[in-house]
Image 1 (tube, rainbow, N blue to C red):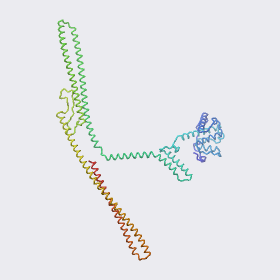
Image 2 (image 1 turned 90 degrees about the vertical axis):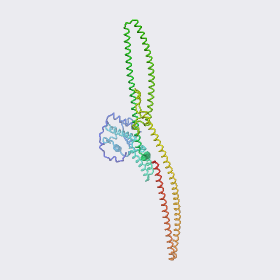
Image 3 (image 1 turned 180 degrees about the vertical axis):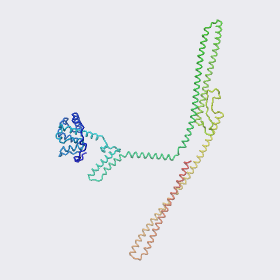
Image 4 (image 1 turned 45 degrees about the horizontal axis):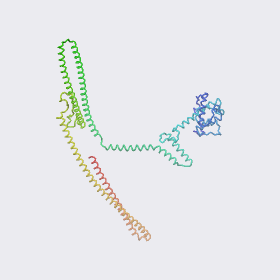
Length: 550
């Protein structure tokens, strides 16, 4: 924070003359400020007596002030040779104390005076509050602290970058002061720190690249595969037919439910009617009993009536017995009928289930689209001909089912024939593939033989080139010797020199011709091999495409 002696030359700003709104002359506020200052001094390791701040001396004030300034800025220079009044104002201006204009340096020798102590106590209290703010800021781990130890492994804040840069520059400057111009260790530390920061990013990038490769592979596979539109159309048509079949089944069950509901309602109505008749018969019996009681009959009439009554009673008992037997027979017949009807309904349910599973609900496939094989049972029908509704079993259902069976058998036979034909085609293709593989092996053997011949030609050319080079070297030596001899013996050997030069040129031309022939032979063999491989690849690709298409 200390910026040297430049603070003393800084002109006072407009805040220097701001008015202090604190109640500095209030005794309770002064007591609170003294308590805050004493607590802060003790917490920072400065032993202070409670009564010292009530009647402070110039020496104690100077010690407290310097302790607070050093706590705020450990590098602040207090010079013993400089007057305290000058250092006091300079330090307050450096700390940006807003009310420095209300303090007179003449108060410093006697700070406890009544006219000076409130303002000086307010300045100390302001420094204490600034120290607490500094503590809070230093403990806040804020990025602006530019502490490299507080920088997390992964960061994006510009202050974290600045902290690492400042630490790197500080370390590099220390090395520079030791006389070095390069800083490999410091740069390595900075690179390792940023590599640690980017490690997770690189890991995520690799994962995303792998995911991209998987998606691209899936996309390529989707592009190569056939579009599922036709299969979806087929499934849609099948689902639509199943929907129609299930709607027909639901309609039939709904009709059956309504039929049973009507039967139950009819039974309830008949039961109510029989109960009403029973009540009427009880009333008639009571009325007749009352009539008999009020009649005045003779003994003969009573005897006759009793005899008739007994006879009628016996006949009534006989009739009741017959009615009971008839009711039992009717009950047994109803139970048997119910069982028969239940068996018939179960059989019809099984028949309907078989129609649904076999896909024979209307509409049927051509040419049977006009035929309806569904059958309904009406157990409440009075006419036996009306028990079954729908197509006639003997005339329509059985012949249609027989025809469908024959069609299925024919289709199965056709599918089986097609399977046999496809198996034969596959066997033929396998045989052709084996034949082509044999031809490929044969051609590969020829290719290998041609490669061996090319290698032999190359080796022979190299041998001839070596021989020619040796001959050329020998000729050069002879030529050099001839030149030496010509120089020694004079013009008499010029003819020999010319002959040797001509022989040398012939040998060089021969070597060049051999090199060109060898290169042309190698190029020709290589072209033949490449053309053969291309032709083999085309044939194999054609066979693969043909096999996949069939």
